Amino acid sequence: MERGTKSALEELKRLATKAHADELVGRLRRAAQVLREPVPFEDKLQQADRRSSLYEPTWAAQDETEAKLLIYNTDSEQSFLDGGKADAVRLSPYFDSGSTVLDFGCGIGRVARFVAPECERLFAVDISERMLEFASERMAEHHNVTYVRSHDVVIPEVPSASVDLVYSFLVLQHVEREDAFLLLEELRRVLRKDGTLFVTFPNLLADEYLDAFLNYVRHPETRLPGRARFYTPQEVTRMVEAAGFEAELQGDVEILVVARPR
Ligand SMILES: C[S@@+](CC[C@H](N)C(=O)[O-])C[C@H]1O[C@@H](n2cnc3c(N)ncnc32)[C@H](O)[C@@H]1O
Image 1 (cartoon, rainbow, N blue to C red):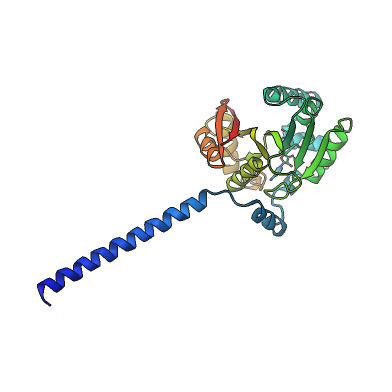
Image 2: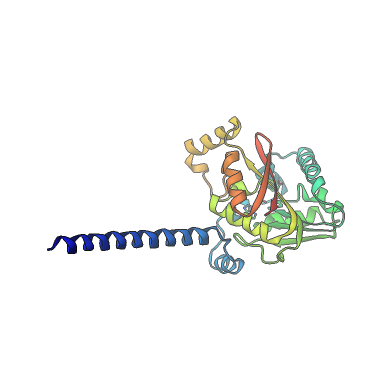
């Protein structure tokens, strides 16, 4: 082969390789962009119909005493109520008497019973029918509460952009990390643009939660689908922000997240 032809061929090869690399980079960039878009609500809803719930059996309490143990590790009504009241006080800067509020994973209304009298309307949402039954009995005197069962990672009964404050104590830690993320996106869907999200996660950096994690490691029989997962504050910030919020973190043992839609 002549030298000129050879170098022309080499040049063509170089250009083809570069074009191929550019095309690949372009495709990867487009794929990354799609990955960062929230999953459309309709797609999640379709999946929820097909997928049976992983988590509900963990929370199917037989009676209120068992529910309190599952939720707050106590059978004392007094400490259950004291904790609920203290958590409601934490929420008070973020809503008023005209607000629509949503308690995600409300349990038997430990916190909701103190929030309901202070807001206009409260959605009490949970995946567990049993928890919702006990909640509605315990909060029967509050007529502004609507009880809603969530389906996997969607809350179809709650319209988009309809809620001023979404709060969720001790819940997102009990699902797979990917589901926690999808739920954060769903909570963003129901929040108004100027609304507030208040959620908690257990801090893996705290000794008590490292011990709880090691307990699951050493005792595999305790690793139920609804077991707790532990997060570092950096991981929480990364996830909450990737789900479309600006996040502020407080707390050392319980990570308290106050976030607003971006
Ligand atoms: C530890 S309890 C906390 C209850 C309540 N937030 C409180 O602080 O008293 C966890 C609650 O989350 C609910 N839950 C668990 N997984 C859920 C899910 N994937 N979607 C909605 N609720 C869920 C359980 O049924 C249970 O009521």
